[in-house]
Length: 298
Ligand code: GDP
Image (tube, rainbow, N blue to C red; front, side):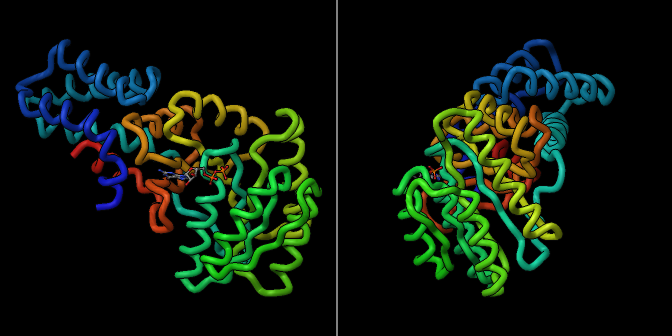
């Protein structure tokens, strides 16, 4: 299925190795746990997260006295699922309108994800309005316009260099008057400096609070999975200032180190909500922790 396909590079790195280990397992020893640790670290789950997972597995193995590979495999599956499911993965968008704000540095896949989401909502029969909140780069609004046309969504955009908060303000007004179900806002990934960017995101956030105080709202941070541990650093910075409600992990298809998803979810304690596994409109999946872990291990 799609998630397996999207994870194929990471699977090569991790599941072949693990399946070999489980196939020859006849009882736990130090060598087994060391090899497991090494495999998980190579797949970029991060030292801390791997340590947590393997410590738990050691405890359970000792308690249960596992002698079969399938038993220890199931225990590992449960532990990894628990680590990656840190809250509700479903998008909370019950109000009309509901708002999705997409944030993250340039090039991580914000615009592409917004386009994919617009199409998905459209196919569910929802009326979608896009807001071109990245006024810093003219190309960003252009690209979003192309996606809007493809998805049959409305779009509100202003001139390059105009105030992003005013685009959001106009977008909300347009959504109200046209009866849109979902407003999806793009934002700049880079301004003159970091403080500037965080101030702007806060300003946008206050506009939404003021204009749509009762609306369901998601602030989704997009992270490029191919950037590995750097993605984690970026995420920490955004989390401190922007009040993230969920994560979008993009480009999982492009990395053999998809284990980064575990490190990010576990260390930020923010739920992963969407994963991108390609450039095509249908290459966006709603995240399911159990399914993700199964696809990775089996
Ligand atoms: P933005 O600057 O954050 O808006 O990033 P874009 O949406 O412009 O995406 C940057 C590049 O990443 C584009 O070439 C996209 O086609 C590509 N991209 C986005 N998501 C994915 C994905 O899930 N998989 C792959 N392989 N490429 C992606």
